[in-house]
Amino acid sequence: MAEPRSVDESFLALPLSALADAALTRAVDLGCEHADLRVERIRTQSLRLRDARLESLSDGEDLGLAVRVVLEGTWGFAAGVVLTAAEAVRLAEQAVAVAQVSAAINTDRVELAPEPSYDGEWVSAYEVDPFAVPDAEKTALMTELSERLLAGDGVEHVQSSVVQVKEQKFYADTAGTRTRQQRVRIEPEFTALTVDRATGAFESMRTLAPPVGRGWEYLTGGHWDWRGELAEIPELLREKTKAPSVQAGRYDLVVDPTNLWLTIHESIGHATELDRALGYEAAYAGTSFATVDKLGSLQYGSPLMHVTGDRTVEHGLSTVGWDDEGVAGQQWDLVRDGVLVGYQVDRNMARLRGMDRSNGCAYADSAAHVPVQRMANVSLQPDPAGPSTEELIGGVERGIYVLGDKSWSIDMQRYNFQFTGQRFYAIENGRLAGQLRDVAYQATTTDFWGSMSVVGGPQTYQLGGALNCGKAQPGQVAAVSHGCPVALFENTTILNTAQESGR
Image 1 (tube, rainbow, N blue to C red):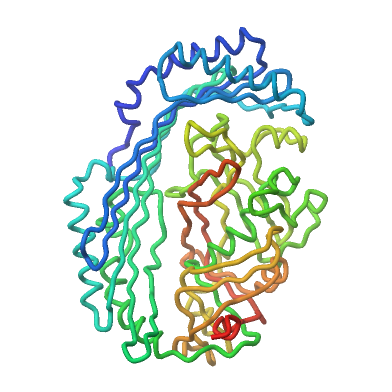
Image 2: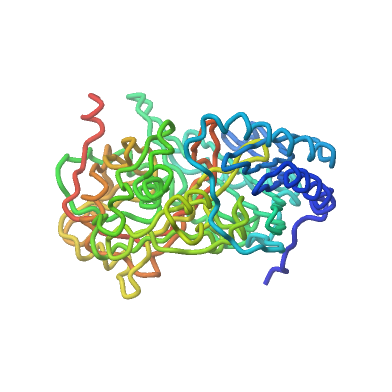
């Protein structure tokens, strides 16, 4: 068992309390009804290899502070990089000036839903800080794993990478909250490429391992069987190159968690962000079909569908102790028994909807950016008595089984979509009957989730996710996980992507 971790002393040694006292006192003196201060330090590292040779190793650090105020019902915001009390005062004054200028065009009075005050520290669940591991050691492991894959029969090239992030935040507000947090996340990835020398055609296949809220132990501690998966990829890739092109039509579709997480992200995660449903977020990737007049009545999917928002799940990429408005992490229902019952909200959106409390979905990806409403870990819950993957496939006479995510497309209302994957298998009489190529599945959101007829058991449940979910203008990125079991979707439209593209 790993020792409990604490926020790095080097971050706690910054003048956090002095900055908060200076900024918040000045904001109150200037008449603000609310003010908060964030100090953030975000460290990133990316290692990239090509054919088992180090191609790049880059480090970055973003350190700064931000002051946000509400003055007479209008937001004001300012950010800087000088960590002094004088600068904190200046930023508070600048944020007030922004609010005064913005008041003339503000049509919605800002009021924040109440939240208890907190004074605490929270650190995400990881064992080995990746930034404490020597670069040479990390590069050696990535090289060794890449060489294993490159040595596989038929593998021409291998691209591999590992992205590591450590995020530290201090938050304080005029209600008395002061919190200190540290999150670590990591994303290793290996891709093999094979080339048909006779035709020039090529195929690729990527590892299915998701990014996670863990440390370097993800690559060394048995949390994922890296060597086992890398050993299988060459043969799987050879099978894929020889696989027949799919015949377009309708099939029962068995979707593995390694693929379904992305469908959840796009068709449920974004669609249940309240700012999209209200039309506030319209310029970047659209609004949502799941509008507020449908809350409690929209049949989102089959009665088997239970989807939660969650800021607390262990190793989740969107898991926090408190969000960037000082709201404690929590779990709640978004879809229950197939019906839309909730949204993801921040404190202002919660007040707009008459809610008693925010569910903690405010986040900024650096001190330079204002917090916006961002996605929780949105997850489809398993059936407590549900089948294993093998049992579920065993009940399908004619279908397709998909693993791994690849490309996707969805309209701006999060309603009409198309997804591909890493691998597709024909299912015949309850058995896998070889791989297929050129497969994509297409549906509308409600038709797709309405066709879900079997949900796998807890033994099939897995967290997937991404480090780079985009939103807002100026653009911000956020990391988010989506848990789900394997699931069966009946009579799904399958497209042949080669025919669609005219190949």
